[in-house]
Length: 542
Image (cartoon, rainbow, N blue to C red; front, side, top):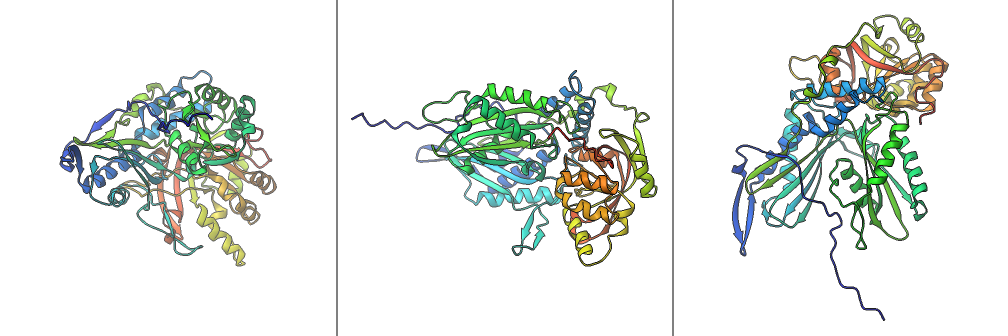
């Protein structure tokens, strides 16, 4: 009989030393102290220090990005293989980051679900319900900054109400060795969260040919609705489905970048750098590019391999979108430290690109009867960039449901939906003295079932949103003579600052950000993605 194995503990996620650049928050030492317990030094944190940390972190993460992310965007501008549309999107992203860095208009109008991962050293004492005080800090940021409330609380199985604070947050806290309290703060918007997938597979996929083919096919299904270029993550394996899903979220934030690059017999997690490079090359060959064709579909790809039960092989895919809002922070005996984000993204914009040639673009006057606008759009092929000026109606998920209820009750669609293009969006709060808060597009696909119903009644003849759409939209536009225009997903602050001149609520004000708005736009950039002839820009790419 063989000898029984000796116990050896393996950290499941053995990260290398943290090389994150932190900045000390002046005066934060007032929230910490030191004492001893059973001969060990303890770090004492005042509960209000947790609130202050969360307040500052959620503010920073909604207005600033990491320098490495912005540099990756800037690299598209000088990539000789990038498409013209790739560069157009990249420039818009950098300009958006520059405007958001003024700390008024957030990076994205979907200011996200607040998510906190905390690892509390066992020599740290707070003496409170940590989640309660972290939530208070989140509450303060979302109620005082010009952010958006996106959290809906169920009153019954079918009735919901917006909480009006962006709470509740997702807060996951763990006990670890040491005398520091380390955090990762995330603002995950619906666009990127909705592109997180779990696949229950088998060992049959665990060979080089099958696995790569499988992952590339799944990567294609991401489409462009979540605002590429993406940071894409894949996780292969996992001790449970939920462990796989949590790992893919953290991998997409680069939290696991310092994992080892090989496995061992004890089951440690590791990154497969060779497969990452192969998948990045495949992403560049998809043709989707940074939303409107090209090679800049992904900044990078992370592949993490985990141990698994012999009868299970969970796999997950997720993204961090162009609003790559992640921030590390920590509290030590010296005070509060936040990861140093990029407060000067404008320095990455070449001076030569500051002034664009607007005369060469196709200008569309929206202050005309709908038939005249449609007659103008039909002159141009899909992928043509247009600049829109005039009146647009804004309505998203709940507004569409309300309009459908009118038809179901035998009532007509509102006249505004027939006279003007409809923009799928929901704004953040409007700062004083500005015409609009951050106001980027939401994912078009959620409204697909309404399109033929509304177009048959003369509504939604021109739609403006982000991402690819289903065949039902292409067929409807061909049948009824409609168009789908793609707005650049991501630069919500730029759209508000440079292209929206007026915003008025005209219907369903009780819906908050989901109300129906009428906006005036000037040179609003968009691309023809589906036309009245049955052409779809994404046909053959997905």
